[in-house]
Every structure is written in structure tokens, then in C-alpha cells.
Amino acid sequence: MYKQFIKGKKAVLFDLDGTIVDTHLLWSLAVQKTLEDIGVDWITSDKRYIPGVSLESLWKYLIEKHAVKTDKTIEELVKKTEDTFAKYVSTENIEARPGFWPLVYELKMEKGLKIALLTNSAKKAAMPVIEKLNATSVFDLITYGDDIKNPKPDPEIYLDALQKLGIKPNEALVFEDSPTGVEAARKADLEMVVIWNDAINKEGYIPVDFKGKIFTVMPDFTALPGNLDLTYREWYDFRTKQMKEKEKEMKEKKASDIGKDILKTNQ
Image 1: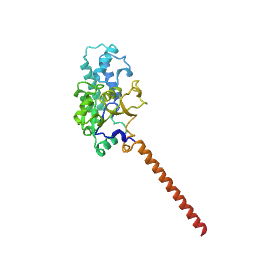
Image 2: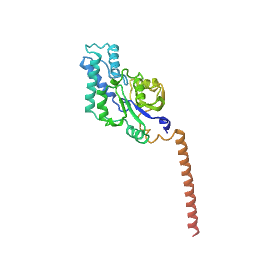
Image 3: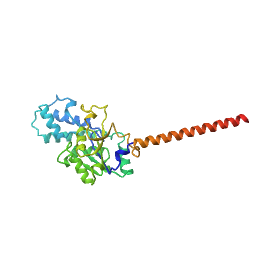
Image 4: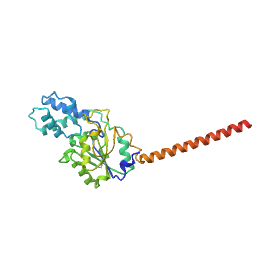
């Protein structure tokens, strides 16, 4: 049913946090711990972490918006948050979102597509997550936030990936989860699928905030594996043909059963 998602594609580009794995709580706790260490305890959980936003931008926002007083530099606060996050990851059982592994296997091993990971997170924070997932060897390209100059929503990370993979924008499919990531992909003129679970409070944003070449919004990857060979129309035609064949088979069986009953009666 989702054949159009990968038609003409040569690579699939995944975001990490919030897309492949839900690390929202761990990042929020890491920011909270850093705030507590500088004597700040009045910022509520729904205000201290914004998914998809770089830590540098986040700390600038927290300091300006909430008038946080500290003698720490932005760089020091970012480093502290990353170190704390990595420690939390080391003690947690990290799992990919449902359907991710079957999808990646199908894309990479059966369809022969390149698989890339493009994250705003620095290597020191993202690598522990990737290692916990045992996913290091899965990706043909990994780009971390500290590998580029301008983080998402700037399109640099996507444009850089296209160049390194040697492909055009229409030859890539993106999986993102945040308005920041979606905006970066939009600016790079990329088609995408948004992973967004409306059962989870995503800091007040909803699917209408997502702009760009978006095929659909899904809560996870479970609908995709095994459903990439047909379009909706092809699936409909296939299922209609199946139903007609089954109906014909049942009629023939019923006719055969009637014939057997007549023979028994005549005997």
C-alpha cells in the first residue's frame, strides 16, 4: 500500500531522537538535572525540553525566556546535559520504535536502499543510543550534530547527506518526528513520513504544524514492512481479485456439495 513512498528512491534518511527511538523523557531529565545543578527548579517539565531543537538553541531559549541566572556558558551547559543524558542511556533499556527493524531489513536487504542516520544530537550523546540499539552497522552514513555547522531546522545536514550519498532530493525518503526536523527536510526539498503519536504530548504541537512534502503521519513503523510493493490502488485491485476468486471457489464448492447430496439421495 505504500509503494509510492519508495518509488524511485535510492536512500532512506532517519532522524534518531523521537523518530527511531523515544528519548524524550531522558533528554527532559538530563535538562532538569542540569538546571538543578545551577540552582533552578521552577521550570516545569513541559517547558524545559523542546524535541528536535539543538541543545545550544534550547539553552539560549531557557536562559532568555525564563531569565535563568548562571555563570555557566552555553557550551558548558550543553556539555553537562549531553554527559548526563549519556549516563541515563547507559542505565536504561533502549528499544527502537515498533516496526523499525523489519522496515530497515526490507529497505536495505531486499530493496537495496542506502540507510542514513542524521541527528542534531552530538556524537557523545547519540552514539550510546545507537550502540544500545546495536544499530551501528545498519547505517551507510551517520551524521551527528557536531559534524555540521548549522543544525536543523537548517537543511545543511540533509544537503550534506545527499552530496555524500550521491543522490538527488527526489531519490531520498526522510523519517522525522519534530517540526524542526520536518522544516529541515522541507527546505532540502525532500519527501517524508512523519512519526508522530498523538497519544503522547509533543509539547503542544500537532500534525498541522508539519509542512512540506509529507506522505503521511504515523505513530510508528509497523504499517510499513511488507507493504512497500503495492500502491493503494494495486492493493485494492489485488484484494478485489482475491475476494472474487474466493467467492467463485465457494460457489463451485457449494455446487459440488449439492451434486453429492443428489447422488446420495438417488442411491
